[in-house]
Amino acid sequence: MKATVTNKGVVIPKNLLEGIKEVEIQREKDRIIIIPISKDNLILQLGKDIIKKIAGIVEHGHLAEDIEEELYGKV
Image 1: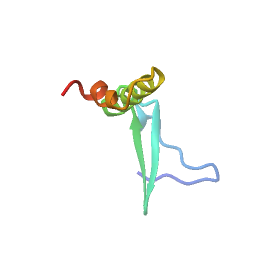
Image 2 (image 1 turned 90 degrees about the vertical axis):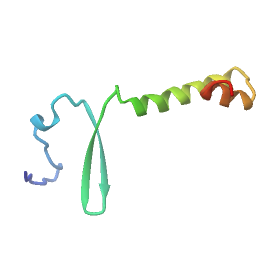
Image 3 (image 1 turned 180 degrees about the horizontal axis):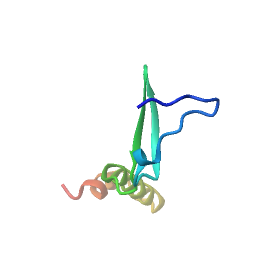
């Protein structure tokens, strides 16, 4: 499919974005990549959960050693 680039950018047909509410746009050399972002994306959610855990540990004054236990369980 071809699309014309205007002074405002490019329009992507809605049928190509069915069910997608947000995308990440990346430029790599001579390609532009559009990646759908899903709120249900497990990898992204895991990252957010880890950040929340670390923030909670710091906020409650736990020692740094407790971070590993909190994230990975008791060893």
